[in-house]
Image 1 (cartoon, rainbow, N blue to C red):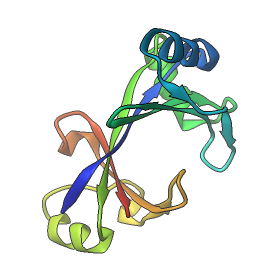
Image 2: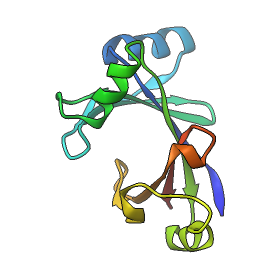
Image 3: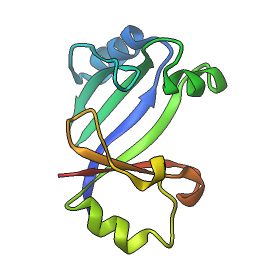
Image 4: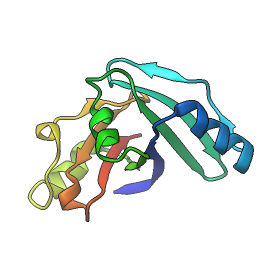
Length: 133
């Protein structure tokens, strides 16, 4: 069902500072800032060997990420994203065991691929994103 880790998303209060730290302390490859108004976020991708981190920052006061930052002013891990081959198969196999956000209707994620989010209460307190590949 899950074929691997797609990324770890971390909300940060200062996107430039976070990118600087990952680049200069860990030697990571850093993308340019990408503003995604349809998702209400600005992101910078951090490429480390075997791991992709998405640094997230609110894009405007109505951003869903702003609520997270209001509760956690220093930032923190927002979600884990896993690759799956077929969202409909995993959803059908798990729909009576876990709750999906957005009514279980896939959305198009930041990579342009369909995604579903699993309610954190059903995943030991962690928001989990499933991304179809």
